[in-house]
Image (cartoon, rainbow, N blue to C red; front, side):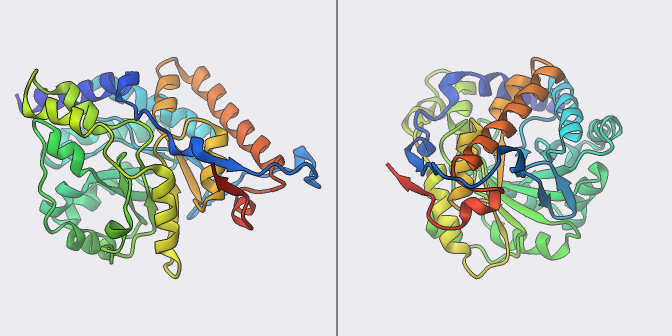
Length: 343
């Protein structure tokens, strides 16, 4: 029965995530203007997107953000995503591996995924509230099962507070994060899931994370999704309406993170409403090193491998156009000089 409830919840998440009403109604990146360079002194053919995710040589600074896991349809989608990600050399975060903590049989999903995409660069994923109550060695076993290149720890207090079966116990999270960073042999990424990071939140972080994925307000809003799952007129459903615009925008979260990082040795990743190669270019210009896509990739994966591959090619092409017309040969060049302004 617990497994059935788990699968039902994950299936609900996937179904609702594709509904337009679950998206934030404002995308802060629409308010960022990249300056046009009419004299780029470049040939378009010379634009280079290649980027490193630690030891992994990726084709671009793009990756698939963690999306779905734990049910039959999710496994099929992950197989599609992983196969095409390996082909195009985009890293990929998997959905939460929480189920495997209590159901050892769940590991077989990841074994099948790895067998189907042996060359894919995959990131494990666990929630901060689970990290608090789970011994580090058990969490790191999830990394081993997946043969993952990194571990994502996602923090989602809004979702957990509104989820009917939620686990909104976050006390001790910062210490648990420090402990897993100390124990892990692979890089640890701290990620928000759509509500972003304020400056005050960032100042609390002492753990030696390898990357911070800002996961800002602008894309799928998990508070809305949990409201969509909750019983009619329940506190959760009504509160989801109240908090439908809760969160720090992706643009503000990026600015907060870049300012906070300064002398720290870590990367800033951007996700949360990234819908085009132009959105990605704006995030890179604002200081991000990597950019994650979720819902747009999910929509294409539902159409099959060919559709997903074509869409990924389009994202790369759009980023190249943005680089060329900004006078930047590589993504990292966008961060040099002030190439953008708020409008």
